[in-house]
Picture 1 (cartoon, rainbow, N blue to C red):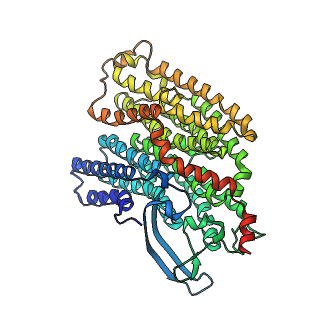
Picture 2: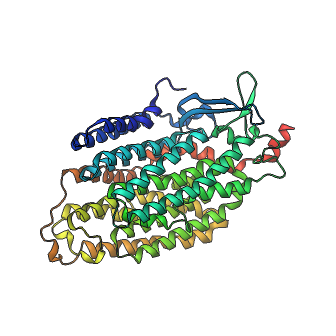
Picture 3: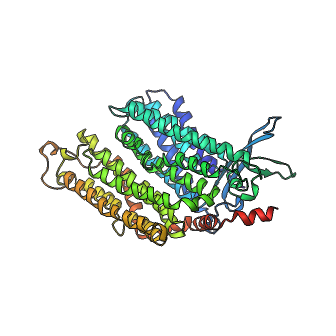
Length: 534
């Protein structure tokens, strides 16, 4: 247990900022923006302290003793007086090698998105209050170790994102916001049903020897905590674990977004304001992959082993289909949106490998994709603010009078392609190394490799149309990057280079947890556990 509430501060610091923003007069626009920037900036500092104090060798995946900065206090205790018995929900936070990179990513992207939001001028108070609420929801989701608490944070994200798209978005903002809401809520229903089934199937023992049902995620990961007759118990001959796995997987896959649940993403990206697109691509898509690894893999290891070929298949479809869709786009922002669909396919492929290299590559790809795609959306926003168009054929030759901006674009584009020396290359290489090692998905891995060529195709073609050639006469007066835009892009560019040259900075952080997770998923034997219980 942590004596200093590091994770609570990380999670609820934006809420403190939101309360201050709500108390400020709406005319104090600059003060509202500064408050948001300070709150997200302090969150980055706290995330840095968390990283500095993180014990790399202790970062397990399912043992309560190996989670760090743990905070656990009773939250809701209620004696139902019925067959449900005592209902006990804890405020339970902790961090391990799987969640630590996502915490760092969330803090960084939220801070950069706050800088990007500086030019928001309509309903400033409402925008930044919702922005900070969204930040808390994202951070809490990565840190929660109680399923009920996780679900609360998961749902908290839905409301602010709906309004941030629906009020501050583009011409079709209402359609995009409603579509996002319906898809996400549809997935949340599946997650809720599985959560209830797991709660009724798992027991936790108190210090006094009493037993009660629990939402404790770590207890759900331990087969010996399941009741013999629990509906989702691996020892129940009539168990529904396969259906529960599918329901949970679909709920999280919508967020990735995995084909065929991806159609909400391009509309949401195109209509959302630039800072919200940055958060959507940088953090929210990672929540789906994180949920599958944290819940499906850890709680249902035996079903995970059976379905890895299907996970790899959908990863391959995401990679190839997303790349072809990106190649067909004429809207700059929609192209980057479909490229996200393609690149999240690499995460699915790495997850399907069930080995340390592939799964480590998948988690690293989650972090790298967050920084690279955030950079790409910021670059689209920079040029859109100046030209008020995103048509790829409306530009041409921007490098002639925007040389610094073009330099950042080249870094981001080549990182997305996977150029050696940049961060995207390392994570994608690990994904393919791990996946190719598994004979059952080797053919799917070979087909998926075509996505690298397709990605290079649409990225280089976009660079040619937007930045190279003769300058379009309409844009002769465009000015290069200002100070605010430098502060957004420089940190991301530094990370792209740093993790491309020294990827062990992030790999060491997650290594112990990934190794233990792979061991848990591949070697859990319910038959021997059942025999031991008897």
